[in-house]
Length: 528
Image (tube, rainbow, N blue to C red; front, side, top):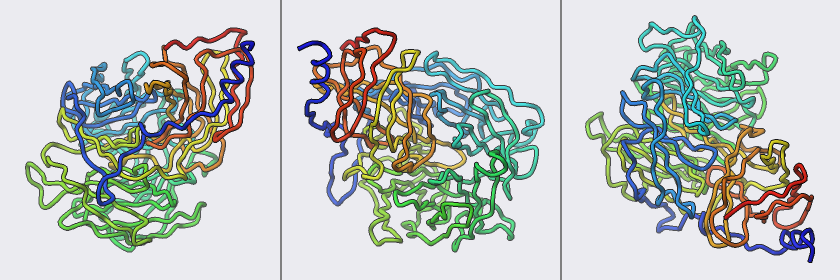
């Protein structure tokens, strides 16, 4: 059999779906279970971000620390058995600030409620393991205010890849700032009706950004707004939306997390024990709000995290009782499909430790949720059930780029939601595709993705794409399969040759895919 025929045979052969490694195990009573990451981090951990190579970037919890750590999954893709290493520190110290993983794979941070970075911003390049300070133009934010500048600003990556930020101390009332991720520059953004300090933003399927206005002004109590990126000649604009039937902020103007549900509704957790659902219109018309399930007393949701899990349920945390040290907290699952449309809240199995500072959640590629709480010990929540079918990516085609990277197309690369949420103090969005390889012997190796064509959510059957670079080697032995995964929901695995030959092949199967392996007349050997 000649090499072309051999490769054609290899690509066309039936391949069993390998999913057991990435499926959360079932537990009693339809709930997940807690376990610790076996290895302790080099220091205490607070904010966590998912890099596009499948590793986790974690900020030290110290107020006056700029240190970052990296959690790398083990050879079989387990973060519970993962190992820690130390990354380059930031140029400024920060605690509670804006954060985002950009379309090119870099990390953006701005501000800090505590530390030296309140009026500054910088980006991290994972390939170079280096931070670069960004120039913020004078007059854009107030640097001599208290708190200074960005402080604990909310932020979100827009559909064009730019970052919309809501500084606490802005030059104009209700103003926002836009970071252009291509030119690395800042400019004034559209103004909302009220300052968005302490607000939680949720991205909707139409790319608009929903917020509940944080205000003590009677004219804006229970009001909501949306940022529409397409308005104002593509510069975006805020528009008034429907009023809520229930207040969501507590007396200190604090509220909780918000996530997008698989059915397209947004679920917000209030700082006063209330919850609410928003049903979008899909256009510039107002949506509608309804009351959600009441939190388990005495729980309130201010400055506490939530995660949209791969099984369609919401994992979230509440503060129990008055402020105290250590602060008792409760962990719960909200199932929107039980007692629909109100949903049902159920307490999770015992967390076991209510001490520590702010908890942060992060959706992992293996379907679990990583949870930090200001300790060197980091925990994992393993949900029950199976991934939501509507969030399952599909692979359509792969071809070489002139620079040797690969271009991958398909559907549903951006997930059913942004992933995890906290509010203005931290953003951990992970609605972008990762690429991993699974060897026949079970080892897992991640590629590095970049330049995602979409930063939307719930993109359905719209064709989207990502570029990716091959790892130095693919671990393990035997035939290799490729998966695209986002927020813990993976595509069916498709065959991927260890030797990338100079030809074009197509095949049919559970995921119809064409592989264009033409590139400068060379064979590409993937060791392992």
